[in-house]
Image (cartoon, rainbow, N blue to C red; front, side):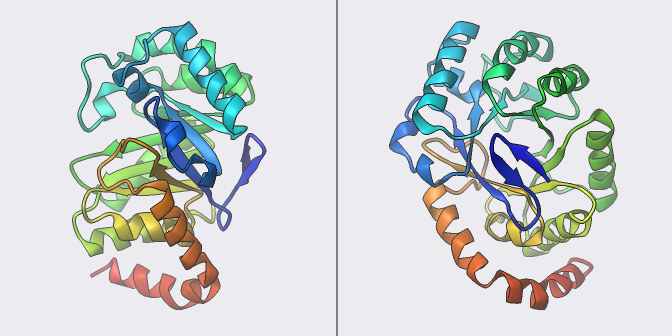
Length: 259
């Protein structure tokens, strides 16, 4: 178990994460979220000046209004579905993390980034948990690859391993859920399906060990990402019968993934 701000995060007690991706986030259902992720790269694309003082004021405003724990993400172009012209290369992201980490409660950094180690050490010195993320917008890799990525996240010092991959069939959705369920006993995992076939994996992920579940507020930041009200309602309905659901379906779903 770890804490993001004051919110404990562990299997069986996932956090609903609302993604702040523009300056119109206040009009959305942010109050339903346990934690807010600030996708600063998206906010810059939507009009906020990509400057440290502007970004600092934006984050402070969110923190003051919502009192929610905050995750800081500045996504690198290489792990974005449609890289925007203004996205910062790796070396240019460091000054922003250095300036903004004191204001937030957790950091998301890509484990494939050459500056991942520096950002993780920076967060650790500030005693902020780290989400080590891996994204694949083309396919769901084999389980062996997912296992290797999870090992890299652990070796770098990440507290949570987040995998986000394209889901194109129910079988792939089940395989992603089964992977999360298997390793949630020894790791903190967030398994996120993307694309048109990802609804099952996103909604059911908390029942299979995922500790974070993401939803859009005003702007979607990934293909297949549900809005917060939809995800909140779906997860609530599933969790009402979570114990019986898990007893009858985890082994069955895991077996289906082997077809």
